[in-house]
Length: 548
Image (cartoon, rainbow, N blue to C red; front, side, top):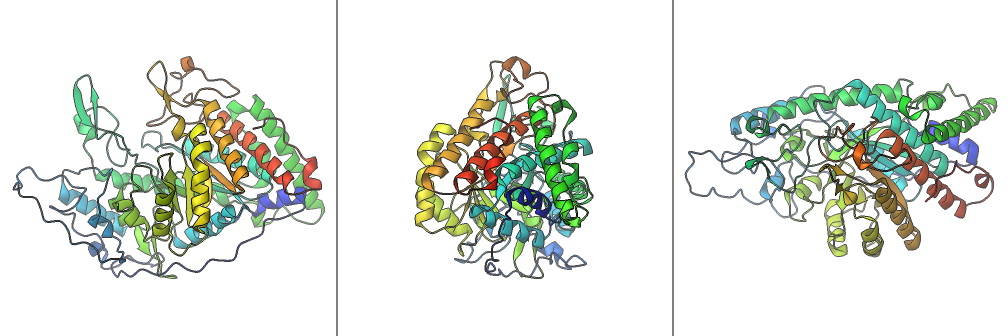
């Protein structure tokens, strides 16, 4: 969302460093894609043809509807393939779609999708374009992306305090990173739509009972019973409502004074206040306060609106394609199509097939896109995927999110960087140090060792330093809550502690203390990188200790 600007925090850093981040020229517009059945993003009223925008939930051809039991055994005729090079909001249905649920009631699914199509967009095209411009800065080494939030949002834990606390930790982390790097930090939440999760197995077996896997609260329930595990399209409407409410609260926090830099000393969470991270954050906050005082004395008023708000965007994995299609709109100002469920979407490791449905859908929308990349990614395949998703090589369009584990990162990432550079492609490189470091604890719960997460972050920076490329950001599964899901950290969480506050519905998350600790370590690495490429005043402002 275009929530004022990062200029407040950047100005504070500039007052210390004597510099300011430069802004990129706007890239050429992505070529418009024609379709007449989708209402404009900024239209005052929904399109009269809204019902036609979602093709009938195919009784025989949709990959998302279970076949009726009484249907004839004869295989249905496949849908006609889309014309080469042509894209439509529903052309993904001509491709093989993985990780989609089978809904038992086609008519109910169709009715739900038509209802969602008539709903207002959750985000707007201009906000997504603004994020793309910011990400172009990160691709050039002029900004740093902080992307974080829940592994999977849930209906059960939806409340204002949880949203506020996660937002507050992200504000703290961004202040720490900005102070160390002295460049803008782009804040993107895994929030307001991150419900669906890919699964390695379609079914789960417990004590001899076999049921469909839990795929996220917008699809089915996590309770292990037959009724909960049946995909329910009505859950998409509830997910829409929760996403809209979450974003509404985030907008209020970001623009209503809560995110003002003058409040930097008040962002500490109660349970981190009397900790090593809390002490270090308090010291940094006092430095920022001093910088703001200097700016005020110099005539740069801290009452300016830019000093009282911040930019914050939302993102999630593009997985449940019927829902994403229902929220896709054509922008009235540019003619481009945007998925208005989030500002940024990414394609996952399990759904990034070059000829797959998810890539087909994403290639036609103009949102900034992420690509999750593991050690299994072939360099030439990555180049081809980027060509499909960003044929005009637009800066800020593509973010590569690497998730490999530390050792694989050192071996595999250099080849990917070289291949992309050789192809002349402009991308933003960031690291997801979470997904490659999941282990099973002796008690049976999934966890992630903090030391392994740190090792992958260290490897990410080392490789980019070796290759002369830009480490553009970090992607974390984290929460503002005092959970015990990842082991380690300076306030050590042990295997025995996991059962105390293990609340995740899916994968283990860093708690607020661990998240802040990691941000200090990354900030120190960014500070050292900055010092190597500059001189003068920057050298005299070290962060409190913690280093990579």
